[in-house]
Image 1 (cartoon, rainbow, N blue to C red):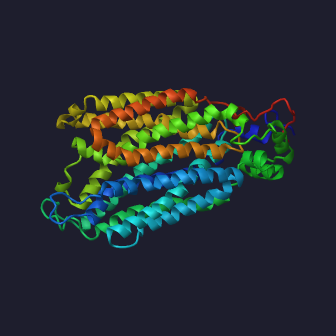
Image 2: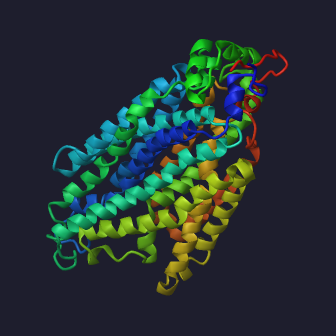
Image 3: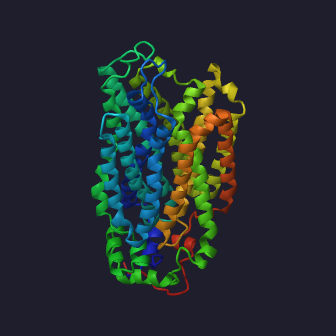
Amino acid sequence: MANEGQSSILTALDNAKTRWYHFTTVIISGMGFFTDSYDLFCISLITKLLGRIYYQKPGSSSPGSLPDGISATVSGVAFAGTFLGQIFFGSLGDKLGRKKVYGLTLVIMTLCSICSGLSLGTDPKSVMTTLCFFRFWLGFGIGGDYPLSATIMSEYANKRTRGAFIASVFAMQGVGILAAGGVSLLVSYIFELHFPSQAYMVDPVNSTVPQADYVWRIILMLGAIPALLTYYWRVKMPETARYTTLVAKKAEQAASDMSKVLNVDIEASSAKYDQARVSSDEFGLFSKKFLQRHGLHLLATTTTWFLLDIAFYSQNLFQKDIFTTIGWLPPPKTMNAIQELFMIAKAQFLIALCGTVPGYVATILTIDWIGRFKIQVFGFFMMTGCLIGLAIPYHHWTLPANRIGFVVLYSLTFFFCNFGPNATTFIVPAEIFPARLRSTCHGISAASGKAGAMVGSFGFAALVKAVGMRNTLLVMAGISLVGLLLSLLVPEPKGKSLEDLSGEAETDKIKETIVV
C-alpha cells in the first residue's frame, strides 16, 4: 500500500524515527574516531619519557628531553599523514563508495598502531625514524576516517537529529583523549609499582629504569584494540542509500539495502524516483557552477577548520609544557621517568574529563535545537575571551595561589572549543555539499584543519620560545577571533534534508509514492 509522506527512500531516511541502526552506525563510526584520537593524542603524553630514555646526557642537571626538531616531528608527523589521507580517501569515497574504502582505513590504523609500538632499534636515530615512519602511515589511515565517518553518518541519519548523531561520532574523539590519559595512568602506575626508582635529582642514572622502554610501546599498541573490535561490523555495513541511488545509480541495490536497514519492503521504483527528483546537472568540483553554488561554503569550512585546529592542537599537544610553565606539574628532576608520565597523564585526563568531554556532550544535546551556526560563532567568541583572560593577567596565573584558577579557565577554552567549532567544523561539511562530492569536500575541509594542526604542532613551541607564553596565548586568541568572523559564511543546515542543502533536489520533477 502507499505510505504517504514517504515518497522516496531518501525521504524515508529523512523522516525515520530514531532506530537501532542509527545507534549502531554511531558506534561503528565512532569507534574509529576513538582510535583516531587515542593514537593522535597519546603521543603528547610519552614524548617526555622518550626524551629521558633516548636523549639523556650523562652528568646533566636536568632529565633528557627530545630536541626541538625531533619533538615537533614526533608530535606532528601523523598530521602530515592525516592531511594526505583525508584528501585521498575523501576523493576515493566519492569515486568507489563509502563502504569500499571504510574497512581499509581501519586496517591501516590497526597495523600502524601496532608497528608504532614495535619501532625498531635501540639507538635514538633508528627508534625515532621508525616511529615517525609508522606514525605517518597511521595518520594516513586516520585521515580517511574523517570524511568517511562523517559522510556515512550524515547519509544514514534523519534530518531531525542528524546533527546530534554526527556530533556523537565526533564526540568519540573526546573519549579517545580521555582514554589516552586513562591508559597512560594505568600503565605507568603498574610499572611504577613493580619497578620503583629514585627521582632524577637523587639518582640520575637509575631514575629511568630499563623497563620504561616498554611503557610507551604498550601505550601506543593498545590503540589498535578498538579498531580491531569494529572491523567486522564495518565491512558488513551496507553502502549508504544516497551514494547507491544518486551516485552509483543502482536503484535495486539501494532498495534492497534500505529494506534491511529500515526493516520494511521497499521497491526499486522508490530509488528511481529519487534519481528523477535530483538534478541531473552533475557539475564537477572545479567547475564554475560549483564555485557559484558552493565556493563560499568550501571557503568557510576550510578556513574555519584551519584556524580552529591551530588553537586546538597546539594547546592539546603541548599541555604538559603549559602546565610546567605555570608550575602545575612538579619540576621534572623531582620525579623519576615513570612518575613524570603519570603526572602528565593525570593532568591531561582531568582537563579532558572536566572540559573536553562535557563540551562534546553539550553539543550533542543542543545542536539540533540551537543550530550549528550559533554554536560555532559562540564557541569561537568564548575561546577568544578565555584565551585573552589567560594571557593578559598571565603573571597573576603563575603565582602558586592562582594556579587552580588558570586550570579552570584553561579547561573552559576546551569546553567552548568542543561545544563550538571543533564539533561544528566536522559536522557542517558532511551536510551542505552534493552527494557525489560530499566525501571529497569534507576531506578537503578536514585536510585544511590538519594543515592548521601542523602549524600548531610545529609552530607552538617555537612561538613560545620566541615571544613567551603570554604573547603566544594572545596570538591564539587572535586566531580564534578571525575564525569567528569567517564563521559568518557558514550556512545553517538544521532541520533540512541533505538534498535541499546541497541544491540537488528538484521537487517539481516527478510525484510518486514509495510502495511499502
